[in-house]
Length: 113
Length: 115
Image (cartoon, rainbow over all chains, first blue to last red; front, side, top):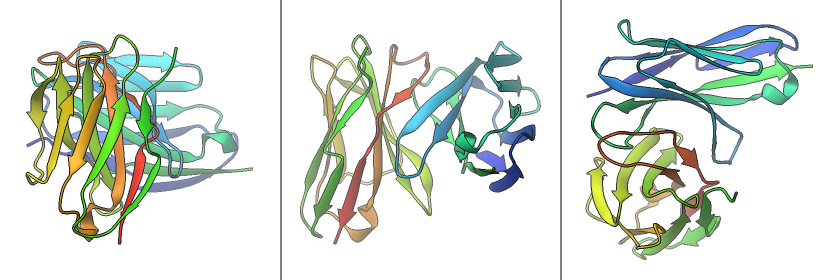
């Protein structure tokens, strides 16, 4: 059974800092990994999707890497802003089992002005 | 292009009642998945539908059911509601279904409160 862990559970940083969020998974037989952002009481916004054959994806100030063999992914946020405050979730999609994502518990990020 | 639309946004129900939630996927998307989010358990997969067929099911009791229509819209039903069913129910749509998975796009969710 796939298990996804995100560390740290919460993080508070001053504006402008670069930061790294971690995600680990136990079963390396994944098809893809997706990073999401969730604002309080809202749905999930897709940030980045990394296919299992890729090593990293970039979008603006966000960069996500994937090391499938070691079961790890990182989300790098450059020059953090107060608007980045949210919960960040990673989810892995299994190989050959449809759209059935397994989520980590999330990292709650607060960026202070 | 419209996103994933979930209705209603908020619901209050009494224990023992049943409830139906609706999800309209992004136009052209044929896969719809449902998730339950609670503070204690986080996000958990309920089921996935593709071309009107349930392709995957999570570890939830039979009180949780769903269906998908020919236009890809999906509904989920929870019967005999329990207090523990209070949660944010999220729907996700994707272009493809089993066996490959693709990027999932989520709706704003339906907040169900059982009293």
